[in-house]
Image (cartoon, rainbow, N blue to C red):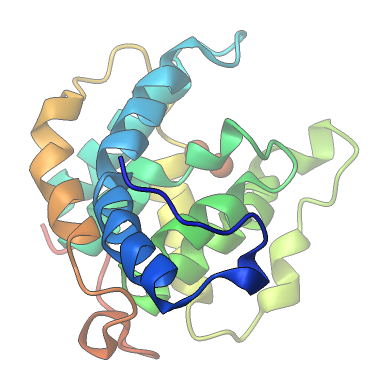
Length: 198
Ligand SMILES: [Fe+2]
Ligand SMILES: [Fe+2]
């Protein structure tokens, strides 16, 4: 395969960067397959729970879909813990960063803050602050994050829940990551869509 001539980026010429651009676009298009693969790898992580992280993710997304939430919510629910793989101490921010160019601002914010909001359920058992979410009191998406955690996240550790398989969600994930990154018509700052309509 053709390669650039430079060994330091500052020495690259236009031909070098013209060569790289389509390759980068092609690589970016493969993101969705890498994400789905990573999600499957969550099937092996974190022992102690009654469900794997993959099952937790599928349950969260299944509940979102059954609540009548839209695609942005469903894909956000599916991927909200993807950061567990490489960023155990800020998995929420990591997942939000992946989603940010492709979903509504509302969903990115909720995924980014869900770790703090989840503390309300167990912070008092682990020496943490259960009221960490109070730092965001009055924020436009506060209630959305509270509902996300209550209905989809904290509820999805049930080995008996009839969750949908990953194949069910693949087309949606592809649709989201095929969007134009940072498209204002997708990001819609300030717009709030309901988590449940069903
Ligand atoms: Fe999480
Ligand atoms: Fe979670």
